Length: 346
Image (cartoon, rainbow, N blue to C red; front, side):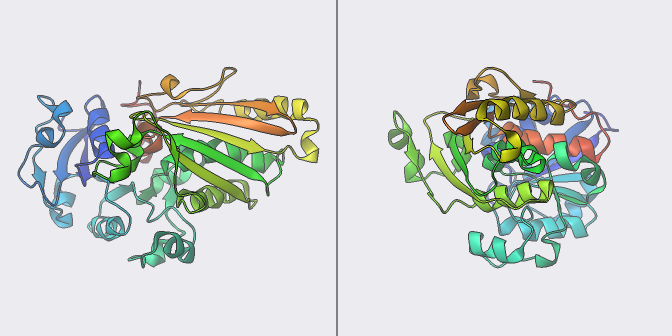
């Protein structure tokens, strides 16, 4: 640990995303984890909650006291659930800290949309619509000076990244988009639930939240925010018997501008390659991406194929890394002027 390094506070430290943040910070050359909080495990070392950290992280868990944390740390990674997170983010920001929020509390543009989909009254509604979305591939300039960054959702990352440039270019029909996504069980969090028990998920795959998943409005909101064009989409998530990873298969129709399906595939591959030519973690590939290709990394792989009169886009990410904690470290690097790849060279 260097006395000159950026000091990081981890707010809500018992979940999988918190473990992933701690793991990534162990190898970060310019940042150190100095504070970790928990409401129920105060006084315990973080390594007792996450044995993977044994011998490598001796931070003791403490209660969330924003004024005290602001004295000890420069930036907070807030890994609390929606609703509860906004209150803590507000306290930390008002104490003078810069905050990266993992919840959905500041991702959407509309208070009404948030309260409809999340079923709670937003505790800081005046900030809805003016918090920067944490996708440096599109918002790096704004992230550099942001006081609060809304870390993207995992499923939305796998859909927004391929869709936004294609919608912006006018190459696809915007009213007929189907997003079919499969996620590892870690996406459901660490708290025990019947549907994520081993006997329920092993040797099985199941759709859930059909037509009601909260990430659908985030996908539509951000694609419109980036492209300037509203879209309509159908999103169906599935739980698969693997620890981590997301594979999204996205079905679109080429627009008249795109020409034939074969021509559209070539144009879309070329456009995506141009869009992400300078993005260190986004790779437009010729092979069909798989979750194994990106597991444990901050990388994104995507490609385009044709099938009948539709174009099929396949995108793979790691839900805990590029879908959560890796994106947060990438955002932190941009916020503080570090190389974007610090702590993420995996």
